[in-house]
Image 1 (cartoon, one colour):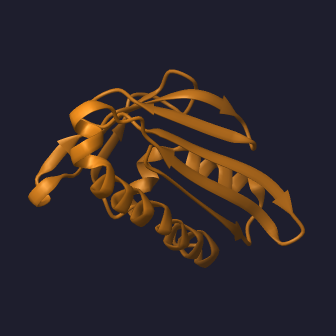
Image 2 (cartoon, rainbow, N blue to C red):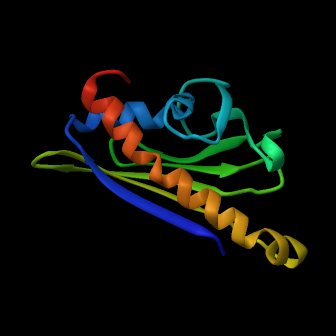
Image 3 (tube, rainbow, N blue to C red):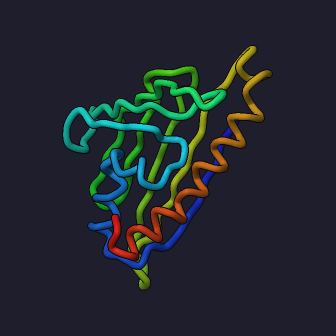
Amino acid sequence: MPAASRTVTVARPIGEVFAYFADATNSAQWRSGVKEITAEGEPAVGTVYRQTVSGPGGRGVSADVRITDYVPDRKVVLEGISGPLRPTVSYLFAPTADGTEVTFSLAAELSGLKKLLMNGPVQKTMTAEVAGLDRAKALLESGSA
């Protein structure tokens, strides 16, 4: 199963950091694979984000997600609901002496032909996506977010 995770400490208060990541429309600022994203409501369990991500050959692919778990200042979990890949996306938050620890994780179940053909490329994409967490950290700390 392709999966990737990254943890950073953002030198900002937990409420501010949580609000930024809980609103998935902000992900277009720091996740390189997100071409466009819109929300169908405020962040809460059940909120759907319609997104287009970069697919093979750079073409846009639908990859909508829905919030399935939402605990203010603690965690946000989203599940893929459209597209060829239906990942689980999670953000975990913890206060630290230096700000807020954020863990961003991606995982996807692949089976059959998808597992055989897509495992390597999906792993590579997930690894690149979680590396984008450093860009989010820089945006938040600079006040540009």
